[in-house]
Length: 379
Image 1 (cartoon, rainbow, N blue to C red):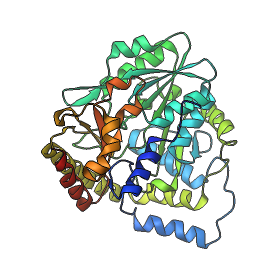
Image 2: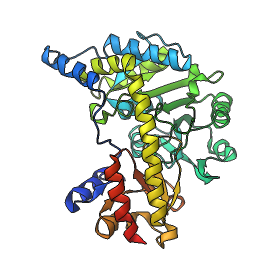
Image 3: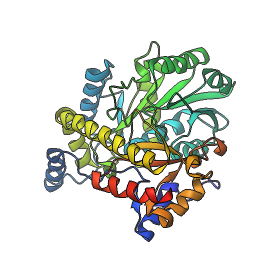
Image 4: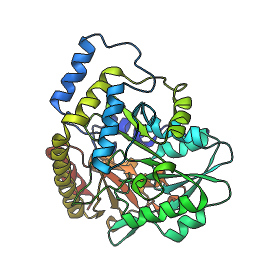
């Protein structure tokens, strides 16, 4: 782990606190989740639900997750054997990679990638192979030939994040079909991070990789309550997969954290069954916030890429005369009183992302308005 220091999120959030800058770096909303869901958690705490829950997760949450996958995507999972609760999606991805990839195995990831992916691949003793997402006609995508070329005799997993953080892309059925073809041809396992599954815009459809022909039996899907219900601090996630993969993930997870906060599990189960109308309102609100931020960024001189999902906008800094996103991100609090994330930290090939910074729009409208007014000073 010597190549990994403090995460960029911790560094930039500390910079925001130290300078009083507006934090559009780390992706956490500044509004509460559904009130009734919060009350379920409060009542669980008041009723004394404060001991270890079952290691695989509360049965009612596992049943709610299975019902959600079936109703929304037509994917049938046995809640007793094929659904497993984790401490957020981050642990779900980590336990999956640690369970399914070992020393010398290769794991393909699409760059830019969420920073924990690189760290957990290193913890597994595995080797990461990156496939670069590049903007084409306003959205980030990959070259199918580069994906195929990344596969070698030691390749074990493909790690797929869609809707994609930080690029904002939602992989199309054609793109997912290419990934599925590669998995089937080379007998690979896919680990999919789908935490933004509900937060897509402009009518864009999220398609789970597991729904494609032959992929349910070779896909470990990960999601969580955090982004869906605006409770990122609850760290309540889940894995759905064939039973043999769930057993492997459980074998690892039990020695990481063993169990997940019981009151939050109960509240997440309630929300999956009762609060999806609230989630639709959230999605609509976020789409408006996205457009609000993009308008401000473009007025300030950035080239902004319109995301199809997630919380984030990628902004090209070159029209403003800057070329290094890390340098700009560290200077932005003093230059404009705003914090962003330099996208290059999410690449193995840093030069491919050096001219991008990532802004989060999961904030109140007045916060976005003040931030873009400050960013206008850069011009």
